[in-house]
Length: 185
Image: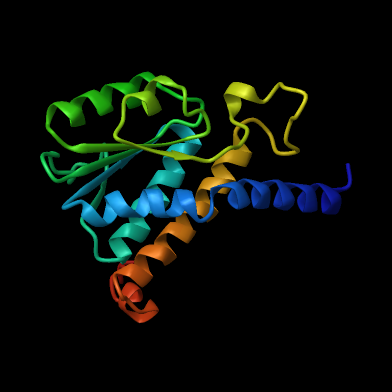
């Protein structure tokens, strides 16, 4: 395996996912975030790590953002937003949390590669990133990246584009974001 060639292919694959998602999916994700009083985020496995990175950046924007499962995550209610990740279309925990948020009258959003899955079909807002996940990593159109890595890598960069869009809409400077960064590192 030629790692330079593989890296170039992986970058091109992530770029293709972003090309299909920007700008429509960025705007589609930003509008409910801007309308929310409080935001809770959740994902499983590596998708969960991408959701945590998004939560951190939303916090850096000065938004009231929390990761589901943290002890300081407040309850959701009307005016709040739950954002979940379900690349393959659904996970039992994701589906359950959507039900809890809906029962509390919070808005719901799912970031997915499979818009016909159980989670996306039950939320108010769908963000579609058309990328390979573990659910379809054995097809003839397989990514050079293993398992669900293409979806997860695309999530990270896509979320950064959402943050830049939100920063512009909130009229924040890079220094204002930096001012929200922890000093406890």
